[in-house]
Amino acid sequence: MPSAKASTAAERHVYRLADLLTQVPFWAELAWCDAEDDGALRRLHSVAAEAKSVARDVAGDFPDAANGLQQLGRQLEAFCSRFHEAWDGKAHFDMVRDEGEIEPEFRYEVYAAWLRQSPVQDPAAHELWRSIAAAGESLNPPYHACFRIGTLLTREPYPAMAWPTSERR
Image (cartoon, rainbow, N blue to C red; front, side):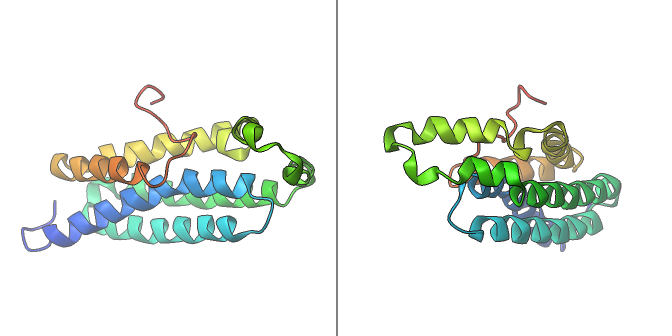
């Protein structure tokens, strides 16, 4: 546990990590359904890279949680790689090619169907979502609360269908 002097920095790291990790499924879902450009995909990679960096900072603050946070960083990297590969693939291209022809009143249902077929829903992604939850739980109790609060606050501006609920853990 960090010293009293370092606790403010540790809290900032934990809140930032929770914020970034909560954004990962949001940006992945947005990228999957965005046929116009790769802006959301670039943002996904940027958020994941920053999350991995902040996870290293948190691991420095909490040595007992370091192994889980390092594993989380590797899983983030692997998820982004698989996601990008699928996003560049023919199946994704064929799916989103006719997006402009979707009637506005059916757009949500179509996007939901696309997401059910996306890498966001594959077993490896669900393992990542579980690892994100476990990373927060591996922190000392006051910081575990900071992590939970951070994820809850971030879910409001970054809602995602894939984000695990407590029932999925």
